Image (cartoon, rainbow, N blue to C red; front, side, top):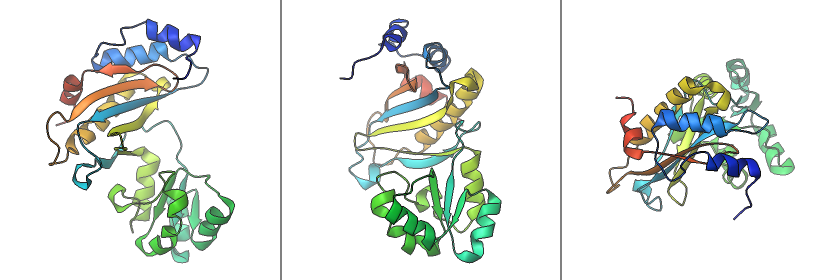
Length: 236
C-alpha cells in the first residue's frame, strides 16, 4: 500500500471513515478535506452487485452533467472530407480522417480526450483499436460517439457529457465536477449520475444492486455514502 502524506492522514482523521453519510454531509467533508494547491476533481465511485464478465450484466452509458466536469474536453472527429468544416464549426478541436489515423498510429499522438466518428469512418478508426481501446477512447454507438449527428455529439460532449462503465472489478469511477463548484452544483451533478446508474440496472442483476458509493476529491480520502439514501436521490 502506498504511503499516505500528512495532509491525507489529517483529513482522514477529521471524520469517521467507517460511517455512511448522506450526500450533503459527504460533500461538506470532501470540500473540507480537499487540501491540494489546485482545484481538485470530485469523483464518484460505485461498487455494483453485478458480474461484468457476462455481457448481460455490464453497466455502461452516458450522462450529461448539469454543470459539466470543469474540464474542457478536446474532441477529435473522424469524418469524411466533406464534413470536416461541419465538425469544426460544431466545436471539434480536430477533424479529419486518414491524416489523424496515421498520426495516432505512427506518432502515438493522443492530445485529445474524446473521439467521435461517423459510421462510414469506422473502418479507418477500427485500425486504431489497439491504441485507442486501452485508453478508453474507442468510439462506440452505445455512448453516442459513433453517429451521423456529428454536431449534436460534439455539443453534448462540450456540455459535460461523461461516460460510465463497470470495470473488471464491477466498479464505476466518474468525475463529477470540481471542488470549486460548491455544494449545490456538485449535488446536482452527482444526483444526475446516480439517476443514470440506477436506471441502467441490468435485468440479469440479482440481489443488492448498489453495494457501495464513495465520493472523494483527487487527493483526498474517500467518504462513504449511504447507498439506500443515495439511490433515493435518483430523479424520478
